[in-house]
Amino acid sequence: MVTESAHEFETQDLLLNVGPQHPSTHGVFRMVMQVDGEVVRDIIPYIGYLHRGAEKLCETMDYRQGIGFMDRTEYLAAFNAELSYVMAVEKLAELEVPDRAQWIRMILVELNRLASHLMFMGAFGIDVGVFGTPFIYAWREREAIIDLFEEISGDRMMYAYFRPGGLAWDVPTNFVARTREVLTAVNQGIADFDGLLTKNEIFVARTQGIGYVSAADAIDFGMSGPSIRASGVPLDVRREEPYLKYDEIKWDVITEQDGDVYARYLCRLGEMRESVKIVQQCLERLQPGAIMPEKMPRMLRTPPGEVYIRTEAPRGEFGVYLVSKGGNRPYRLKVRSACLSNLQALKHMSVGQYVADAIIVLGSIDIVLSEVDR
Amino acid sequence: MRGIAKSMMTTLSVFLRPPVTRDYPNVHKALPERDRAFPLLLWDQEIDEPFCTGCHACERACPVECMTVLMKDNPNHKSVGGNSSRRKIIDKFWIDYARCMRCNICVEVCNFDAIAMNNTWSGHETSVHDRKDLVMDLQQLTTQSHSGQIKEWVPVLGKANEEPTS
Ligand code: SF4
Ligand code: SF4
Image (tube, rainbow over all chains, first blue to last red; front, side, top):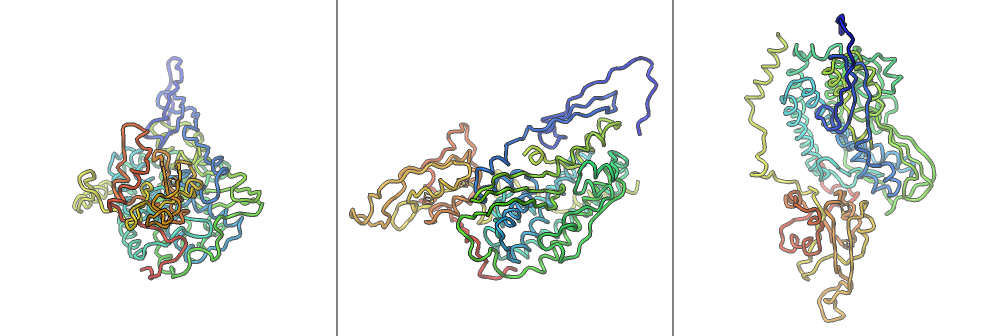
């Protein structure tokens, strides 16, 4: 990529600090880059600025109280984070979730994936230098989705809507019609992004061939989600270990072969189309029925045991490892965050690239710092 | 160049669509009835006292421990010549809005439907200059319900809708 110029005299590498408060780090992430002119020679990431001890806090709380903290673990896709947690509790407590609750959960997590990917599109657009336009486009449709979430759960980001066993309360009666409306808007938004970025020569020149990671390396780094699928590994928890009702409907795992920043963008764009398809099928299958199992105890207690539940969150595998020694609270809770593993590949992907490219490489793995630091 | 032309066409088509901007501080969008801002105490208009009996259930269930509840004997109870059937009633109540994480748990555990999430804009526009002004006392927590400014939504927990979803 970068051609070495013949130096006439010795030069010294410069240490360049990026973050923690820098818009391109998507939160409070700090990295120290060792740069030789414009070329990155090394990256040392520093994490932990957003550490709140969410895992430890959950150990002092009963299962319902923990849900609010899970929301805050992954604030761009809170439904997905809640889902892993409540599924872990359900598995421990051997609760049977009614069908209707499962379909509604599936609709909500897929809509949340759409909202999260829209956020990625907007922020990534700014990273590559398309100033403002994609961000505002993304906001427009994300707003529609979030308004829908607000009508259902009452909150725009921290939903606290899933409960071990099902849902806290039922969706509004106009849920299906409203969701269809939102899907129409989102379809338009996807088409806009496609038109704005996918074929745009400037965008392609800026992103193609940057931040390459091979399939083997991606697996070694423990990457997951769209970041690994862009390297040609068809790894999707929804397909590998179907949870909810993913095995009953038709959808495709989107993969790209190139493993670069552009492939990761294409992968997310394709995934958004799949999510729309999934939600449409779920809406057709949604039947009236119970949303909670009969005979739920007032205070949920679990038998001793341990479970690991993983689900496919927008950024990859979101796992919850839960140990119980009986009683109404976890003995140990560990969140397996996709972002943390994806971030490991940052140095591998950016060394040898220009400084400006390192920024879009970071943008392309779509980190959420609250999930990395927890 | 074809791609750039397509981008331009996209932006042009968006330019011709109606604007989506909300003129926020001047125009407030209608909030859904389920909107959750911060918890408020509800007022029993019939007997003219709060519904809350000070039973501490919400205080114990709050994940961030932002509530403080004190109860007292109800001076308006039937046994002392009043018209209320509540033997105990709330004496002092504080909620620290700065700590509340709006999780709705206090509403779920209350057996008397005495507490609800504020679903009006007043619950969202709570900025103050001093953090301790966010600690709300009983009077501040009940005025909105007392004066009939909120129409609360009390969730039906874990029950499916009676009407079909469409
Ligand atoms: S909403 Fe949650 S955090 Fe706030 S007072 Fe109620 S229980 Fe506590
Ligand atoms: S609000 Fe409800 S739960 Fe809380 S103290 Fe009053 S009556 Fe008890």
